[in-house]
Length: 132
Image (cartoon, rainbow, N blue to C red; front, side, top):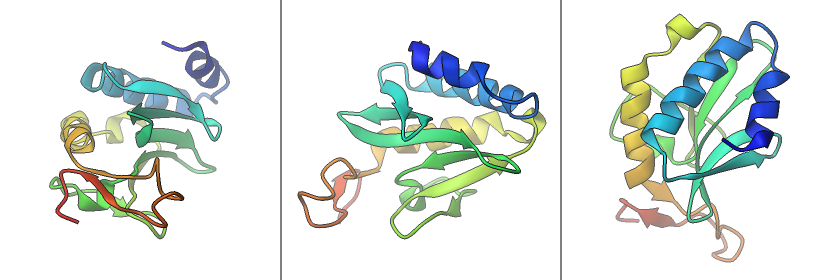
């Protein structure tokens, strides 16, 4: 585990830490081959430089964000932002449906919009698992 992610967890408050620890364990187990680092101040996992999942402490909850989540086959995420991202929010570990998170992580591996090259492409384009 990269030190920057461990440092992020060490600085979390008592409410967010158990949620983030659970999410970290699930993501690490399901995406062991992904690159991971602190990106824009939050833990994020990447495939070939493309962000696929991350989480962060918001004022009232922990947000689990999937960059291509609006295109996933597995329901349960809420749209976030103006691109293809979707999220789930939690205030306690018992709210985390680990099986749903595992299914979303499987979709994150297979279904990706190309955020890595968004500037070069002049917008968001399909990368993997999408017909475009």
